[in-house]
Amino acid sequence: MKEISKPIIEIKNVSKLYKMGDIEFYALKNINLTINSGDFIVITGPSGSGKSTFMNIVGCLDLPTTGEVYLHGNDITKISESALAKLRGKTIGFIFQQFNLMPSLTAYENITLPLEFQKYNVSEIQKEANRVLTLVNLTDRAHHLPKELSGGQQQRVAIARALSGDPEIILADEPTGNLDSKTGLFIMDFLKELHKKGKTIILVTHDINVARYGEKIIHIIDGKINKIEKVK
Image 1 (spheres, one colour):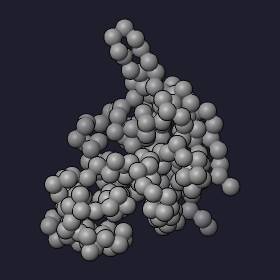
Image 2: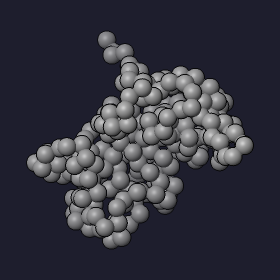
Image 3: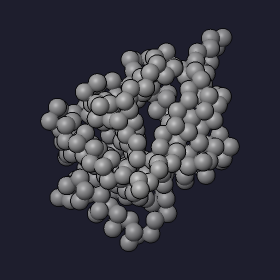
């Protein structure tokens, strides 16, 4: 019997209001979404649609103005920032378009830094860093600085960092945006393989070809979910 997927992120009646002087602007309006363990969800929409704000809410990087966001049943609006950071760090790995690597640290050191924050011991850190570097086929570049790596190699370091600690969710924000088509294809195939192995993938993109890798496409327009499309 197939195991029933359980909700891993639940968003209930979420709105996000920004104020600029006397002007109020809703980036999100009454969003409801449940993401189950093992889903491959794609968030897409035009520039200014609210998808970046939505990504920050889904990734528990920002709090809603109103509504509730649950990560593994924990209402993130009700727990302390330190407790949220710990929960988020163990549950979600982040991949960003700009890679967000520390320029003064080697590939190995960029990967081990978040593990140090999560209080892994030295032997655990070494073992985990070597594991994820092997996954992305970069063991020979472990002690190179980001400036000594190609764009594709830097993104693979970013993926290795996201995978360190074996989080259940991988949240990728335009992961192919700064890459050539061949390298972008490699990255998407890699994410697809991670999904096949049980990872929950949440991908933000404006590229419809990239979006087709997902199981469901969440179309965001004017801060609202316009439609949810199942990919055939």
